[in-house]
Length: 488
Ligand SMILES: Cc1ncc(COP(=O)(O)O)c(C=O)c1O
Image 1 (cartoon, rainbow, N blue to C red):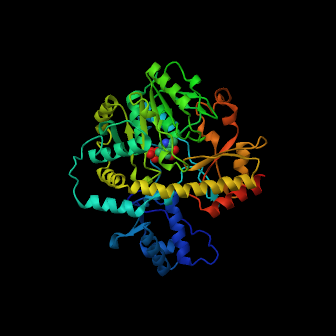
Image 2 (cartoon, protein in one colour; image 1 turned 30 degrees about the horizontal axis):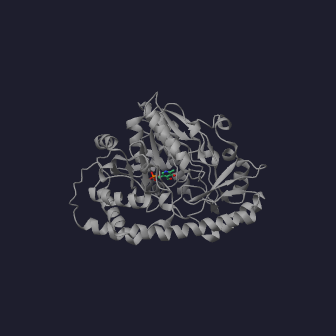
Image 3 (cartoon, helix red, strand yellow; image 1 turned 90 degrees about the vertical axis):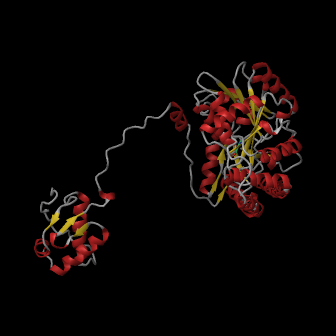
C-alpha cells in the first residue's frame, strides 16, 4: 500500500457500468480504491499526464474525474505538489472498540430493566403512552408562561421544593379536589412522577430492602425500584384491586395506584384502603400513592386520596404530564415533613430545583381556576371517547370483556378464552391495528413464570389495553371494526 509521499499504485480501470461516462468510471475506480484502502490517506498521485496514461484515458477525462473526486473530498489538488488522496472520515478504518464503560451497579441494573419499544406504523394505534394533543390547553399555558417570563421571578430560585407560590396553590387545590391533608411545606414540585419515584427510591431503597408493588403495575416505578438493588414483592390483584391479605410481613414501601389501578383501572374500595393503612402502620412501610389519573376522572368524582386518612404514612404522587402538557414535566410529592426534609436536602445533588418558570405558570393556572375549567372540557372529551370505544367493542366484539373505566386514558379488555394475547396482537397487526398486551405490565419478576401463582384468574385472564384518548371517534370506530374483521 502506498504511504505518505510515496507514489501511489494506480489500479486498473473498473469495468464500465451501463450508460456510464468515462470520467465517471475513472472517478469510480479511484473512489473504490480509496474505499478498499488500496490508495491510502496522503498517497501522492502521479502528474495528470502520467496518471491519464496509466489509466488509459485522455487528460481531460482525468481532470473531470479528479474534479468530481475533489468535490466529494476524496482527493486534494495542491497545485504543483500534485494530487493527494484524502480518506473521508466515514471511510477511515474503524476505531478500535472502546473499552467497556466503568458503569456503576445502579446504571447496570437500570439498563437491564430497559425494554425496547416495538415501534411500527399502524392505521389505528391503540397502544398506551401516546400524547393527547386535545389535553393541552395551548392558549392558557402560553399566556401564563409569557406573563411569568416577562418579569423576573421574585421568588428565590434555589428552593429545592419549588416556588412557595405554586406549593400554596397546589395545597389549596389538593385539599379541595382530592381530600388531601397537607401544608405547603409538605409539598415538593418535581419533574413529573418519574423524578419523584427516582428521588424516593434513592432515599429509601437499596440492596436487601423490599418494595411491594401491585402484581401488574407501572414499569416506571418498577425500574426505579429495581435500579436501587432492592427486591420487588408483587401483591396479587383481583376484581377489587390489590389484596391486602397478601401483603408481606415486612417491607420498606408499597407503591400503589388506588384511584385507578394501573393498568387494570379498578378502584380500591374503602375497606381495603383501611387494611392497607393498618398494614403500613404495623410494618412502618410508607405507601406511595400514585394518583396519576385523578385529574382525568371522567365519570363522577374520584375517591379522595388515601393520603388524607394517614398523612404520616402515605406519600402522594401527582403529575400534570397527562392532564396539562407532557412538555412541562411538572409533578409533585406530598410527604410527611421529615421525608420532605430529606428530599429537599438531597435534591440539590441532582437538579437543584424544578423549573421555576413552569412552576409559576402552573401556579397561575391553579389559582385562577383555569386548570379546573380546562379539566372540565378535557373530561367531557375523554368520557365521549371512552363511551364510543366501549359501545363499539360491545357491538362488534361481543365476546370481549371491556371493563368500563371511570378515569384515565385506556380501557382494560379481557379476551375470550380461545384467544391468547399474542394471537390478538398478531391478528390486529395484520389488519393495521396496534394494541398493548396486559402481560407487558407483569414482570420481569413475574414473567419468569410465577404469574399464575400470585395473580387471581380474573386479572391474569388474557387481556389487552386500548388507549382511546388520542384517537378521534372515527379512528376508534375504524379500529374496532378492523379488530372485529381480524379476530371475531
Ligand atoms: C401509572 C403512572 N404514573 C405516573 C405517570 C406519569 O409519569 P410522569 O409524570 O413521569 O410523566 C404515568 C404516565 O404514563 C403513569 O402511567
